[in-house]
Length: 232
Ligand SMILES: [Ca+2]
Ligand SMILES: [Ca+2]
Ligand SMILES: [Ca+2]
Image (cartoon, rainbow, N blue to C red; front, side):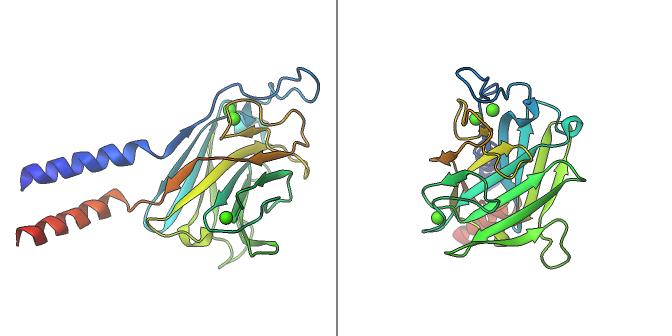
C-alpha cells in the first residue's frame, strides 16, 4: 500500500509539473527590416512564456516578459480562448485587429499601467460582452492581476470562462500597446514576428491547448479512495 502511494504521488508530481508552461522565442519582435515598426526596444512586450495553472475554482495565466513591465508601465497582455464550437472568427473583446479563425469564445485583456487592471469577455454568438473587470463592483469583479518586474498574472474563476475540471481549450496569448488599434506585437503561438507594424492584423491558428486538471491534492485523494475501494 505504502509503495503504491509513493508511486502514485511521484506520478502526479511528474504530470503536474510539465504540461502547463508554454515557451515562446525570445527576441521575436519585428525589427523594422523591410519597413514597419521597430519593436525590438520594447522588451517588456517580448513574451518569454505563459504558465497556466488552476485549482478547483480558479485559473491563472502568468506571463513572463523579457523586459521590465513595471518600469515601462504601458504593456497590455491578452489571452484568446477557443473552448466551445462556434465563436468569433474575426475579432476579440477589445476590438483589436487580432482574431482566431477557429472561433474565439472568451477574451482576457489586461494592462500594466494606471494601477493595473484586467477584464474578461465572452462571445454570445453575435457580440462580445464584458463579464468582469477589476474596476467593477461585485459580482462583476471576478478577475484580478498581480505583477512583478517581469511577470503579469491574471486570475479568474474557471466558471467565468465557461470551464470545468477536465475541459480542454485552445488558446493564444499576446502583448500589445495602448492604442485601440494595436495588434499582437508578440504572439505566444509563433516564434517569429507576428506583425510588422502596430496595426497588424494577426490571425491566430494556435494549436496550444490546456486541460483543466484537478488540483494535485484532490487527484491524490481520488486515487487513494480508489485504492482503498479496490482493496476492499
Ligand atoms: Ca517572444
Ligand atoms: Ca469556439
Ligand atoms: Ca512569439
